[in-house]
Amino acid sequence: MRGMLHQHGHAMRLALQRLAGAPLAHLFTILVIGLSLALPALLYRIVTDASALARAQTGPPRITVFLRADAGEATQRAVRSALDARSDLASVRFVSPAEALGELQRRSGLDDVLAGLERNPLPPAFVVQPRNPEPRQLQALQVELKRIAGTDLVQLDAEWARRLYALGAFLERGLLLLAAVLVAGVVTTVVNTLRLQILSAREELEVCKLMGASDAFVRRPFLYFGILQMLFGAALALAAAEGARMALNAISQDVLASYGLHFVLQPPDPGELAAVVGFAVVIGWFSAAWSVWMFLRALRPR
Amino acid sequence: MSAPLIEISGVSRRYPDGREALRGVNLNVATGEMLFLGGPSGAGKTTLLRLVAGIDRPSRGSIRLNGQELTRLRLPALEALRRKIGLVFQEHRLLFDRSVRENAALPLRIQGMTAPDIERRVGAALERVGLAARAKDSPWSLSGGERQRLCIARALVGRPALILADEPTGNLDHEYGESILTLFRSFHLAGVTLVVATHDERLVTRLEGRLVHMDNGQIVRDGARAA
Ligand SMILES: Nc1ncnc2c1ncn2[C@@H]1O[C@H](COP(=O)(O)OP(=O)(O)O)[C@@H](O)[C@H]1O
Ligand SMILES: [Mg+2]
Image 1 (cartoon, each protein chain N blue to C red):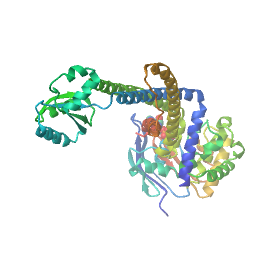
Image 2 (cartoon, rainbow over the protein chains, first blue to last red):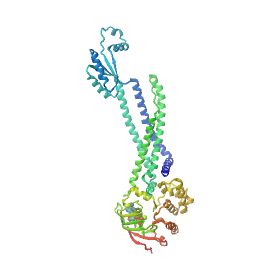
Image 3 (cartoon, helix red, strand yellow):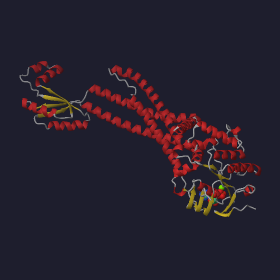
Image 4 (cartoon, rainbow over the protein chains, first blue to last red):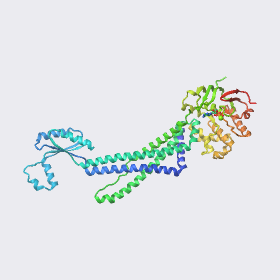
């Protein structure tokens, strides 16, 4: 057990020695890693905060289910229970013709015209709130609601909210793609520096293997090296993203505030920090394990 | 007579390029024996030592170490076995970016020994080969003979019961070569089993121990002294 700890301590020391051995070269690698990770981290923050803002501005999507103008109490009750029975609706609210007329009068300013009507022309309606805001789901729901007996027109509110949703989904996908490209670049960089490290330690690896060192033993310093390099890169990425976030917030206060918009990019939450660090460790470990494995495979006797 | 420590029977080794480095070699080495493998360059001495150390595998035949059949062992088991053997490589294989001390410590690090134990053992091993004063130096600063001694310190630091040494006297002049053989003799007297390959049989004629002469991948003389 103590021997095991000692081996890990030794491997860690070797890894640090390697990093310190060529500080400039490794600083450059860490810069590349850091900036490649900072960009998706920052974009992620912008997209999530912007969609949150958009959602807050538009409110959740609503569907208005109009009944036929001649629908009586019985029809209203039937439709109501049909709506209540659905699990995909978050809320169901009844709007009576009188209530709707009052609303219209308030909003339109056509008090006189409307007051002159001898009969309320507005139909009774239900305003429902779907649980799933995804546009295709909403459309399917709209069709289903139309099939309920006694309903007339089923209208999806806030078309522009749907467009915003679609735009958000598009941005998220684009971000994912961009992140994938940048991460591939990071992995390539890390694997490449590790390959160079392994090449420069080639003699050491070979001698250790000759003297009966296990694969785990020779891999260990490189695992630490890969993980350390990625952790430094991730720390740099977080610092860069944080700097950019504060700069953007300062700008948005100047620019957006004059349009009455209050948009502040939030700092990363603990879960996101843990995700970045975990990701760095996994990529560093994986790149190192793979590089060493490739090297050891070539050493096997034939 | 007790079972031999090393039993080599019918061993051949054909390299991928088709060259037959060993052809039907039979050889037993008893525990505690000091055996010299002689023969010209290219005779197959290095190949045979590599097979016994489990670094390479025979194309045909069987090698038993302590009764254990090496050809049936998988790589990790072979490596575990090798950690218990003291190895001196023909091409030294020292690490020039580490100190003399770290070079000698390598087998112990591989075994996972703790720092204080390593310190003690390495100090004793360097003392034994007369390099204690050079512990902190780089192998670069060592002479040819001192480098050979460092290789020997690295081979004995793990206190192995078996040492396989490939040309440990290298191209050293006679005097230096003899001082190294004196070192091996002291291991022999301490009960260590030794197999030492050398192309310079004149060096070993004055020592006790068995001389096996190889040529062209075969053993051509066993026990007889070179002229
Ligand atoms: N890895 C190898 N691939 C091909 N041929 C080899 C290899 N190693 C050694 N040989 C050949 O096998 C023969 C025996 O070599 P070796 O065992 O090194 O002899 P020695 O140690 O007695 O000089 C030589 O002809 C050598 O060229
Ligand atoms: Mg040789």
